[in-house]
Amino acid sequence: MTGRKELNYKPLFNEQDLKKRVSELGKEISDQYQGEELICVGVLKGSVVFMADLVRAITVPLQMEFIGVKSYDGTSSTGHVQITTDLTADIKGKNVLIIEDIVDTGMTLDYLINLLKVRGPKSLRICALLSKPDAHIMKNDVDYVGYEISKEFVVGYGLDLDGDFRQLPYVAQVME
Ligand code: 5GP
Image (tube, rainbow, N blue to C red; front, side, top):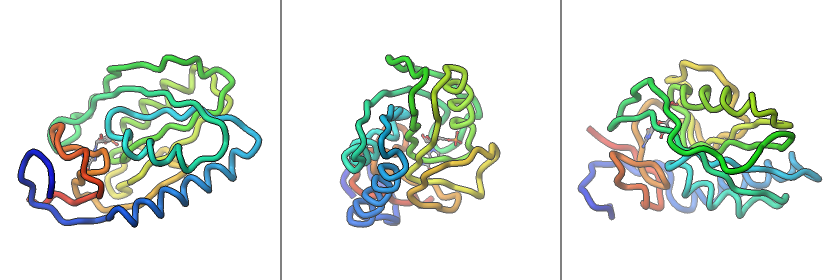
C-alpha cells in the first residue's frame, strides 16, 4: 500500500476493473444524452479522481462544476450535511449530472438533490462509483452506479480516511 500512513486493507477493485467499469458508465451516459449538453457536478472531494476519468469517457459536450459538502468524520457519518463550496454556474434549464464517489446513507445525495432541484435544471441525474444499498436511509434513485458493495468502509480512487489514501489507484476495503 502506498500512502502516508499504514493501513490494513483488502483490495476490492483494481485499476483494470475501474478502467473498464468507468468506460462502460461513460458509454451509457453518452448514449442517454445524445444530442444534449451536460453539466457534470462533482461532489468534493471524493469524486475528483472518478470524475476525471469519467468525463474523459463521455462523448457529449460537457462542463465541469464542483460542489463541496461535509458529512463525515473519520469512518462514520455525522448525519449533518453542510455545503462548503457552491457551484459557479447557473444550472437553470441545463442537464445536470451529480457525480458522487459513494452513496452510503444517501443523506448527502438527498441534500444535494433538494438543493439543486430548486435551481430549475432541465434534468437532474446521479452517477455514483459505489453504492451501499444496505446502508441507504434516503431512497433516492441513483441513475448510474459503478458497483454495489456491502457496508464496509473503503478508501482509494478519491475516497479518503481522514484525508489520506485518496491517491490510491484502486479501491480497498479498510480492515479493522
Ligand atoms: P452518505 O451521506 O450517503 O451517508 O455519505 C456520503 C459520503 O460519505 C460520501 O460522499 C463519502 O464522502 C463518505 N463515505 C461514505 N461511505 C464511505 C466509505 O466507505 N469510505 C469513504 N472513504 N467515504 C465514505
